Image (tube, rainbow, N blue to C red; front, side, top):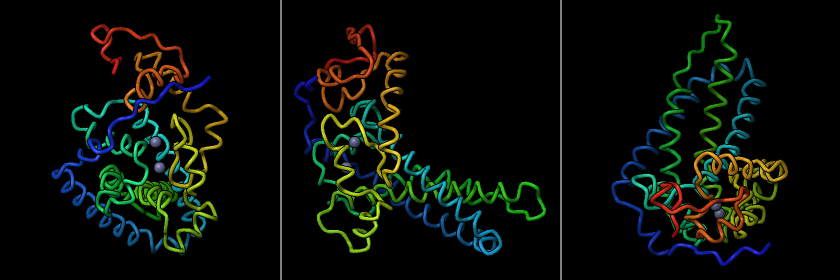
Length: 268
Ligand SMILES: [Zn+2]
Ligand SMILES: [Zn+2]
């Protein structure tokens, strides 16, 4: 079935939604995040020599969880909600809409705009990981060590995700970054372009992209969309690509009711 003409939002209007007050929140979040990561390294260091495999496997688990988290959050933000929603509309959903209209815009964002929002989400988790007790006499010692390192690794790579995503859209990257992309240790540009093929409804993971093929095969996101639509009546992607295209590709049949009868459905 051919997808009807996509009705995307205006790129300039979306870009103008970056607000000054939010930048200060981002600066505070980035500073707090790096301070907490330093505390984490300082606390884990004495244990790395005695439990190297535990530390390595916890970092790897966190790396894979970060790819899952990046895909899940990306799917949520691409698929549901509207840019005119209070607070999250401008602060969190706007960059995702802007990115589908203008892929290269994010390559002009500075370090703070690129990484601030992810640091903000990561700070509460970093506080939890950095304050985990490490008592060698406790029967919970290995669980506490593994759990806190896995959480710290996950949030570190979640925090790196926007930077990795930005590199996937840049024409010229540092050599080491290009090498990491070629080895598929971070998101390769050609792999990510599959997500940028309209109607933008697959390959959501943007840290390494390791989970994308598997999730496509098991229809992970279409299944979630069916459930959300069944429960709320909301149409996936209607704010991103317009209601007609969204209805045409929705995994579940959608019943369009007048907005005043069902607040989750608005014809745009
Ligand atoms: Zn997207
Ligand atoms: Zn992208």
